[in-house]
Length: 234
Image (cartoon, rainbow, N blue to C red; front, side):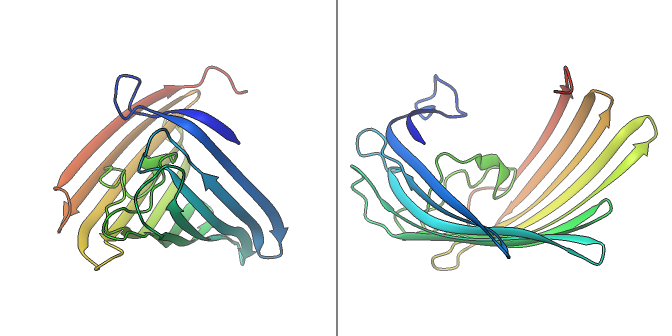
């Protein structure tokens, strides 16, 4: 992929709302007996000496197995990130993650660790990522701290069909423990809860996040509510 402009979630009026430059993304994948092995290279060159102009090279293995009625999925990734193009910063940060999830009937449970390195000046960055999905829904870590981030997490969810007037309902609980990758500074913990109900073409979602600080940011609580209607089944 070649890209020369990225319209980010902050909107066109925000000074952080758009990236421009010349960037290249590439990956190659191969199916192995253990799962799909993917190698990737992201070469981000944003205008001027942007600190997020980086070269990231890495690999990811993801697969699944059926065990005694359970479906078990797993993944492991590693990447190395260095400055690229006109970026004048000096860093060599690593990334790695490991996750395992098991599902039986309506129950899903899992856990993992994600580590974004940092050298005290700059942390491992993912400027093209869907950031809200990772590292807690309260969004305290949309930018990786300079000393990096370790996120140890566990999640449990359960889904029911035909509950009262609803066609389906599901509940999810996620817990995070955060600390810095460099120096081991305790950042805090976060608990996230989500409830989703569906009826015909309509769905409703309520989500709540509670971040409790130790030595990073501030205690933060957030509540979301969302209604959706699907126009067709295509």
